[in-house]
Length: 473
Ligand code: GLN
Image (spheres, rainbow, N blue to C red):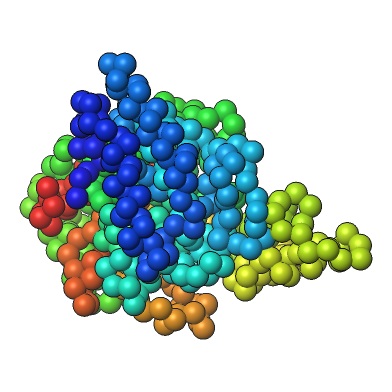
């Protein structure tokens, strides 16, 4: 498998981005019927982008750090004039009038966006089974889920259809599918990557981040999309950190804490991999100790009040007037109701109802207000932990990829897939999932490294130590 770095280097040296794209389109044609990774392949737009890159190089200029690299975009990222569905029927026929900032940034870096990937409807789920357009299959075992909600983006890279992809992570939706598909996934610090043009799910938690088959490529992509954007008021104003330059820094002298709450309850095969990862970091010169952060146990409950509350507000805009689907009825209120009834799937409706309830007068303090207190406790607890440790380590998910249908009738079992990833979204800090070892049925295990805000460079260098030890140069 060619890495993004190899492709960009070759293309900048004159090899054809157009040819690279045509090979990508063939791989997509060969695999997409079975795996259902792409909801839309933008052949025309991709060819135009590849041609632009070839022209820049032909003029003797550098086409950027991602020159000619094929990339897939989660279908909740707006792409001008290209359908953006959020895997929901309610956005049927909608073509955004603008592109997300990250899409503009990857184009400026020379990347070639090839299409839009499947997800759980509005990014609500952990298996991609909540898509209105059918589930995505895990390329490593098509009888199992790729994880979610960015399952399509993870599977695009794991199947080698594209070299890179972008996803969004509100409670784990990049790290969990990365773990289940055996690739690298990053939830950047809140505000590091502009969310202008990301269809909002839970605005205080959402972050856009990279998927790649290796740590260096993930760092390259994150570096390309990070940075202040005046169109996103939550975007950090500090200059974005240099990441690629630090990938080989190692972990010598770094204090790494194994967090009990981030392994408790995980399957034995997963715990075993985490323990091996801990020993690997120790051997590479890190100082290891164990830590308990009991507040993390409350994360899941707080998240399932805060995220639905914000979603119920964000999704109010889909009313049959401004976007996509409209089901006609006698008056406006009846039209709104008929449109939303027909357009939203079961899980989205469940979240809207949960969120509306949690925010309603009389229940606000008991539910939403209480969840915010737990969130503050989580933030404080992480702060204390990061006074003692530079990085934390645990599992990304409790198990390796699970079978289709095994959790669809039990929302709580599905929600528990994100029990180890959610706390980082509540605190706004950074975390990475890196494949390390295998578990049941020889499927990959994801190890999670967590750090304070803007610690991405340090996360990448620790992940790189694990990647090397796992035999991937
Ligand atoms: N699985 C979690 C949920 O369903 C997280 C989703 C996400 O990060 N977008 O809300």
